[in-house]
Amino acid sequence: MAKILIVDDEKLIVKGIRFALLQEGWEVDCAYDGEEGLKMARESEYDIVLLDIMLPKINGLEVCQQIREFSDMPIIMLTAKGDDMDKIMGLEYGADDYVTKPFNILEVKARMKAIMRRSGKKEDEGAGENMILSGDLKLDTENERLYVAGKEINITAREFDVLLLLVNNPNKVYSRDKLLELVWGKDYPGDARTVDVHIRRLREKIEENPSNPRYVQTKWGVGYYYRNEKAV
Image (cartoon, rainbow, N blue to C red; front, side, top):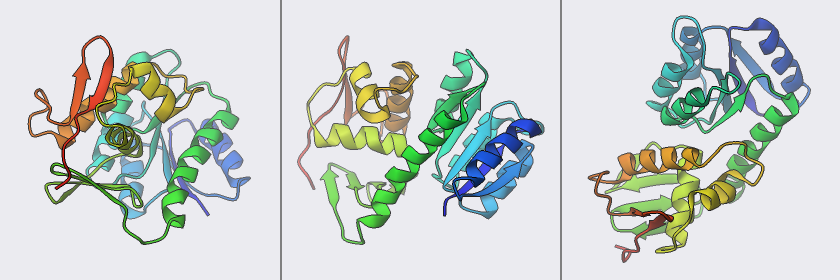
């Protein structure tokens, strides 16, 4: 049974989301300010956190950033309609996805189910190892964990998906639109800036010098690619 945390100060919205999620048979916890939401995220591991940006006490962006310091649990930001900066900032701070208010609850549930299906795959695959090695990078594709020079790196689901796609297709250049389609899906409402944000975050995590990357390269005017290196 999935365990969900909703963090939003609009109680009517929380009530509506909670009712819809309970109908799916999911366990739902609710918090009405950022401080309470962060405390609950520290005390329990959730399958997904639905996190509003505009929150009392601690705003949603800061909550997202602090959660990322101790957990990679998926976070879907709830943003204001048409406020692109909220969406981009949410991704900058480590969110996996966003939904724009006012939203259709069916869309929210579809996004959540997609994330949980993805998480469920790694649980069903068993405990065997399936590692990809390249330079100082090691990707555990079964448990979706990343290691750099032997140290585990905290990485979100979307970041792992982007990196895995590039590593599995070394030296192949992908446009931002193609990466968006392959990783986020054809129906994803975001734009190519989403890809830029994730590439930048990836470089900050895996590159010794993000401004002069060793692994994830840019082909100017075309897109991104992974520079092949012999496994070590």
